[in-house]
Amino acid sequence: MSRTGALASPQRRATFSSLRSRDFRLYLAGSVSSSTGSWVLRIAQDWLVLSLTGSPATVGLTVALQSLPTLLLTVAGGALADRWPMRRIVQISYVGFALIAALLAGLTLSHAVRVWQVQLIALGTGVTAALSTPARQAFVHELVGPGQLRNAVSLNSAALQLAGLVGPALSGLLMGVAGVGWSFVITAASYVVPIVALARMRGDDVRTPPAQRAPLRAGFRYAVRRADILWPTVLVSTFGIFTANLPVVLAPYARTVFRNGPGGYGLFNTVVATGALLGALLSARLGRTRLRILMLFAAILSLLYVTAAAAPTQLVFCATLVAIGATTMLVNASANSTVQLASPPTMRGRIMAIYVLTFYGGTTVGGPLVGTLVEHLGPRTSMVLAGTAQACLCLTITVRLAITQRLRTTVM
Image (cartoon, rainbow, N blue to C red):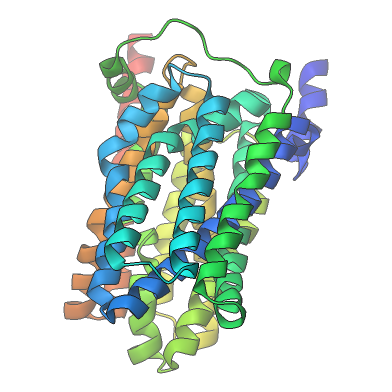
């Protein structure tokens, strides 16, 4: 082994090795604060709409308005990330989030808020997120470089999972103690942390994108031609149909299978989130992931879905959910880092936009699909079908990769 490899290997195995970068430490602190605030806003916003209208359907419409821009504008956000400094895009987006949350706080505390205002603000939040998400995804690569990308992506995922555990609980506490309006105040304040953190980064340490850019369509062509971009993207988007909509299955499990009500539903979601946090920390200890390892993680996840469907007791079911949460994070972090490492700097923003768009597209399609399966076939059968469908996809991709490799060997 070369001296360089000997020195790099321990660094890859260290769980928190990417934190050696001062700029990434700043970015991660901002990510924890802003993600927690976003969860506080999401829970408080849903509760506010329900309080104003008494209509769950209106709550759903508000959520849809916030999600819709992701499907419509993410590719434009990717092109923006490839043409402007990513740090500036990310910082402006956090300023936008802070102003939006402050506006909602002012309307709520003054008792002047109306549901149409909340919905317009939700749409504004969605537009800001859609235009900045590709830059926020690709900016991690600029902060740490390729050697620490997998570790940084995993630690950032762990931070998001931690925020997912803390944010909803904090939002509920704030609404109970101070009211909905002050929840939005806290959300606005949470975005100040990443704004300051980004301002304090050393400009010389942040890699600036090249000045010349390829046309927009070049990103699509490049993604289709590269197996290490195409297949992880297909895998994550298809798995997102089921994994991102797992709560749709867990609610009927709590109600009809184990009959433990809302408390059981909350327990199941907490268990999955805990597993995801553990998976993110485990992923941080791994080196670069090859496609075959990614496919192995995906195959294990498929098996776990079938195992969960057959779980005879709640204890076994919860243990399997921990494994599902952990393996889902391994799949997502592996796919994300694989795609970023395979993307040239001139097209990384657009390729990450394609990645994000397909994932959210699968999530959007999957919600009604999974709900229909659960309603007509039951939660256990739905879990079996999810695992089986994912296993078939893994097998298809594996066979395709094997054929491609054999053809290359034959030509050589």
